[in-house]
Amino acid sequence: MSEALRFEILGPQRAWYADRPLDLGPGKQRAVLAVLLLAAGRPVPTGQIVDAVWPEEPPANGPNVVQKYVAGLRRVLEPDRSPRTPAQVLTLTDAGYVLRIPPEAVDAVRFERGVRRARQWQAAGRTEDALAEVIGALERWQGEPFTGFTGAYFDAARHRLVELRAVALETRTELELASGRHGELVGRLVELVAEFPVRERLRHQLMLALHRGGRQAEALAAYRDFADLLREEYGIEPGEALQDLHRRILRSDPTLIPQVPPASSEPPAPPAPGAVPGPRAGDTPDGTGLPAGSTSAAPEAVAVRPAPAPTPSGPAPAPAPTPNATGPAAASAATGPAPVPGPAPSATGPAPAVAPVPPVAPGWAAGPVGPLTPVPHTLLVAMNQPADASADRRAPGWVRLAATLAGTATVLVSFGSLTWAVVLGYALWRRSWRLALAGIGYFLLVFSVFVLAVTSPETEEISDGEAIYLIVAMGTCWLLGTAHVVLLNPTLWAAVGGLFWTGRQRTDEQRRLRREQARYLLHHYPAARVDLRIGRPDLLRTYDDGGLVDVNAVPDPVLATLPGLTVDQRRQVAVDRWLRGPYGSLEELAGRCHLPPAATETLRDVLLFLPPEPPPVRHS
Image (cartoon, rainbow, N blue to C red; front, top):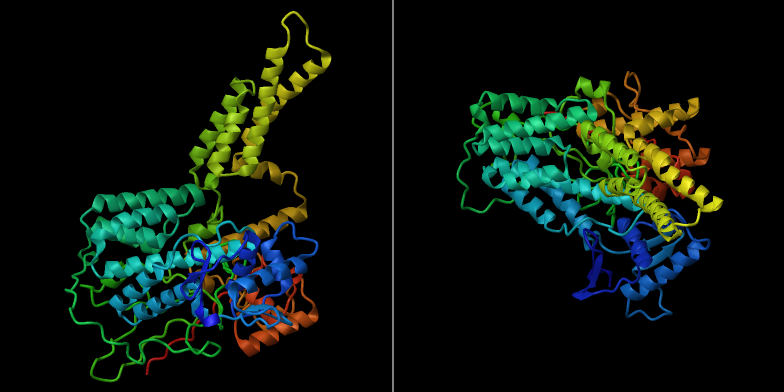
């Protein structure tokens, strides 16, 4: 039965039994199924399902409600099963509910494995095979996953899959550039840069595609726009790789235009046995690095916190020149070069050893494969915001200041009668329902004053109660509205809020900001993991990451100090890591060590789940 089931979560949530679509029922039942799909093949505790599906107001009888939805799912997934027959697809164990389906039944697993195989082919120098693989993986993406589901659990899974899609798009673009298809890439890259405005690898690829298409001025303009964005928002300069590309475009470096050989009409040969690394210890037999049925891992740095974006997979081997290059510098001109092995395998002889792709921890989504850009000094000196700032924070500073001045002037000049319009404008800008409610409240106050003024007879004086109401209503819209609009500026709000913090609150906030900054570093500058020893492997450093702990890299004594866990739970974490290998996410840690949700909440903000660094490659 389970072999005939197929599920889609990369877009609208759908399911099929053979070729027949299934009605998955109401929204909460779909959410329960989504939680089980993200941990397919592994038990999910009932408490974790309750926390994921009802993040803000869990029902008093949560386990009973989950049991009701599970019963509904069993009727959907096994329509031919009699009520007295034990369930075979969705079963209950001592550790929780288990959805027993093959991993390839979920489109997210096929998507992850396709991206991973594409990276392996790319590392083996098989550009066309890698391109076909990554295009096939991207075709499975039907839209943003888990739309309509809220809460930290689904936010984490959504961010992880969106990040993996961004990595796949970058990899596809890099492979197409290497194949000389720059002419058809510019339009798509412009859209991707608008969707992911701070990803340097996409900017690198856009500049290179423009330059190779004879549009040097536009390539330089693209660099200038990105540099202005980074200076305005983060107080930093573009990475070294992007600056180097800018300098080479300025001097019209001929090695930026590779001579692409004509495509061969013969089909590609099958991979040599050594071209794709085999599974490492702890991996599944299919070599994907995923446990049976696993589809999810909460992103860290996107690796730990439910909502942030996934962390990179650590340092990669230095790239070698590709066959498409025309000079020594051509390899560095490629967009975000991935690790490239040495000699290509021969069709007539045994395949030489190649540098393996860095191993991926079970359940861990493959991270970006761009170049390991050195960490700019200016980034360590002034990094003001995390990468996922709100729309208002992503706007340039002068735009925020102009909006504050214009809004404040409008409120003052109109004596508060237009406060509602200003606040609703901010609500549309920030997409904030809270601000929308506040704007509606201001509008109702102004409207009530207008109605009172129109309906009152001109020959009679207004009563004391009406006069007090008019004064309070207009004072609220005028004076309080002015203060409200001023404090909508995030810089001013942070300054005012800091005045009321205690010393402990200020310290906690500073440490939280340092953790967010460290995650930003890991996301955009993978070399920071080693250079700055983020996650404390193990200390002897000068960079303060706010107390982050890389659970896969720290020694056992550090695991014995994890907050929120008992002594036995800490010992279980250390023993399980030693027996079964690294953890891919907080959910996997909780599932393997049977930790209650309450015990893991305190760990979300401090734990990192970075994949272990690969051992150095030894060349014989």
